[in-house]
Image 1 (tube, rainbow over the protein chains, first blue to last red):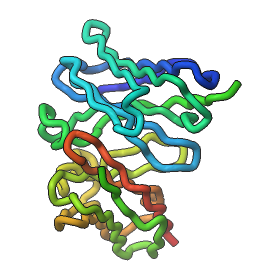
Image 2: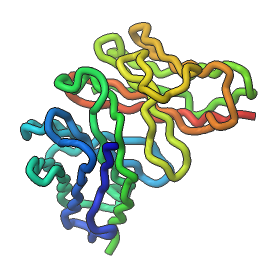
Image 3: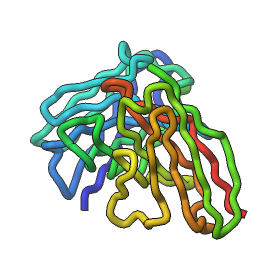
Length: 124
Length: 106
């Protein structure tokens, strides 16, 4: 049973960098795309970006200049860095696997496994 | 990128059919997925590649894509189906989510 677990600070100061890691257990990170998605309190889902196990990344144009996503295949985990955060970056951050469909074509996949989400609050 | 538009809310009586729509100019150019999210939980994949159901998802959930509109149909809606529903599609390699529809079963 594949499980994803987000970890990282729950409180980040404005203008600093938000750093989160998603650890994958029960399955390999290889062979799949992996995404970060966030949800501000009481609002909808917003895609942040994704990464293929090879290291190829793509990110939301609205966040692209601030987002770095990386993968650590030996440790079976991938990470998110979001720089210059403001209060509007306060959200529950989810990691998820593009595990169903044509897993080698990101646009032909569904997000079949999600982490439980971690609330990150941006405040001084 | 373009927007995916969903009705913010809708209600349905138990046993009836709920039809949740998601509209967008380029929906015919990509596959769509649907997710269900209950309060305090992570989203759950209901439909992928427009109409495929993951293992374990009840048959009462079905999906379709007509080009500029994708539809999630819940047949014989049950009280446990009360939740937020999100459509998701692609604009080239960028993932898009609809704003979500809050489904009330009453």
